[in-house]
Image (tube, rainbow, N blue to C red; front, side):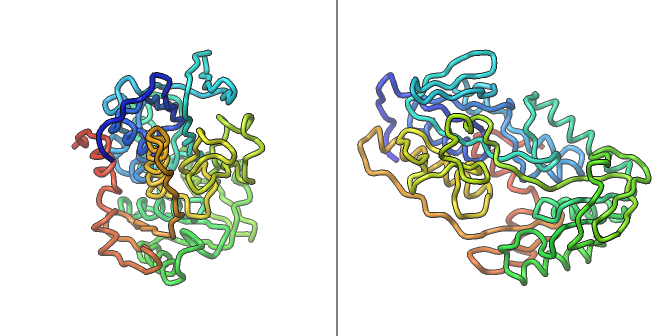
Length: 373
């Protein structure tokens, strides 16, 4: 992208959210010398692709949290955004601190249930300990029910059976299709067969009817998990992998007229929020017709940062072309199946590309830090 920019003192980019999209934008702005502040609730980037393994394999959680400050220094600030003022171009944090921006990048991501998602305003060490505590809950349970058969539920069940083959693991899913409905039928069938080969029991097209009454992520011997089809499963531990939601809290009040039904922001081809030239939305909070994936979020971040740089250089903006479904579904460290550009790929490809460390090493490398051993 050339030499570092010489920028006007008024230029300051605020990035709200330090997930895959936010750190991609921050890294690019940093490399070009553009002043920015990256805001996040946590003090460390969560490589949540590895979150499910971190709840089963002791020690793995430390590889999934990467300190922001070691990469971004004073350009990182921990805090919660409570208000955005577009007229004064100000972001207001909990506690009253205000940050002025010339450009704003919204990358607030999505929220969902632990262990797949982690959105609490705690220190990295506290977060790691929560995953280690979950490992102990798993170890204490003989019968485990995973609720939800999207990609998170599938990978959770497989991780459990890989590390604890003697435990009884049941996956309950309200649909027939496992992982992602957009996957090729042969890939979905491969996911199903892979789980069955590991010994996971499947209850498909059934919805848990008493979820609100069950203890989640806490071992409690002899819980009765009931479904709408009359099935009853006895469990010592229930893990929920459902209900991923766009995290719109930071912007919904000020940008309510630009929200899609799911809470994401409508954007143009340059990833600018509809009708706003200096506000971008990237990652899960950008309303784009493509699967919500870490890989795509990273591409969004690079495009948004490049377009801010192009604006400062008076160059044409770059368009983002939504990507197709590329998904690698790990079935523990030793197996997996996936789809790349419309083609099915087998276990060997997935094991080599993802299964071993779930791309954790890649994230540490991109953040310029050595991965803990």
